[in-house]
Image (cartoon, rainbow, N blue to C red):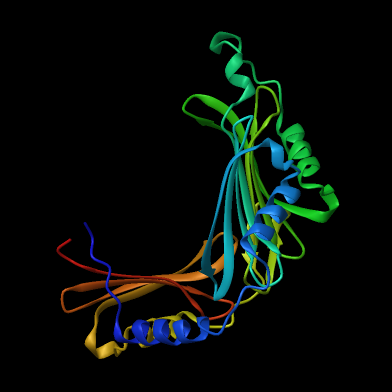
Length: 267
């Protein structure tokens, strides 16, 4: 099992965050969060077979994580702001899939890419003119044909769909309000890229070192590169100090450390 450790800089940041959390209070109850999730999903309370809600901190804010399963075996997961009830993200998966009733030898691809896009847009309540497609292509998962459709809206909301190529059924979808600024998409959505970055690659390295409480002269093999993660431009990198390996991801638009991992090189 890998050991997760925190450098001095991370510990200080965690303590500061914890101090801030103590003064935060939820403005809505967990029961209200469950109600918001069910209403958003269009599911009546008497159709819910099982549900649970937990509190968590995401991107520095208190949130409710709501999960429920319907009587027709569809699973929903929501993340809702405890401050104002905003739906921050949600996803859905059909546990009972209609195409499974079709014998394998009779399964034919009846849905084309254009129809898959249309189905996803209709489900999201969006028009094609309101979104930019990042991908829409046929894929196979365990021999099952489905379209993966992803698109963004101008207000930085991301939608991902899996559509059955046999029946057009929405097999799964998820939605996120992105927490970054300056996103733009070009080339018809086939090449998503940020409109700009607030920090350079070298500044990202400096932030990572500061997070660990170390200097460049103390570490070995410091490297980083620009990449994309969930529509964001990020810097990913790593370095070594004594017998520990540090890995980081930094948001290029905000300079925030979004991922941080420290482990022994012997694990």
